[in-house]
Length: 303
Image 1 (spheres, rainbow, N blue to C red):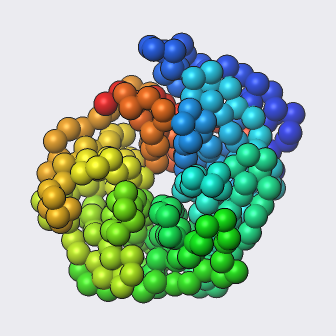
Image 2: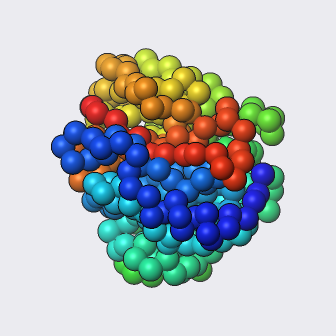
């Protein structure tokens, strides 16, 4: 459902401090604007960004103070998975609009918008390497969408990357296939989760070949965070984050821990701030009716 948020409501919420004072000067929760309907979160040090799946608007906040401010104000579209690169550009997945947008993370200027596909679609998440940005599509056809990056220059168009190998889509528009995505530090391999089956896949970013990661079952898998050979998998409706230890080849793993929090309410994606002690999860609250007054927040997660 798309809805226009009044600036009065948004500005009032954005001026509010974090809801609960937390350990080590970081709050336990950070409120987002009422009615925000978040799904994605990205961080750059102690700065975080969260988009609205209802309007496509984006807020920027501080993980220490809990204060937020408008960065992008829109009245239509969606802002789902997002990542910030080293050039201070914010890459945003556009959900059912079939688009991707790139903003200046400093002032919110729209740098470029891409129409990725005209087919029924759900552009869900994004990861960024030195050479490219990769967007997942949770609906058929079985593609990633790629923005080839060259320094400060953005490409004029995106290109599809057909996926082959172990991954198979159901071709049922009611199901969700690839969702969260992450890249290794060198950008040579990608990891994505197939929500429908709870499977993880290694993806070759050049060929599109996929290989199932054996030994791991993550039902309701959503956002991913890769830290070396440790993979964090948000399991949204299960209100938990699976901690997966991968082998050297990244093609086999095992769940070594499960992170939970009393403040979880269908978290969808996670990010890491300046402090390595914490992850930050955004509550999408999919099981709660969305109204202009529905509350949403970001949750600090100890690891």
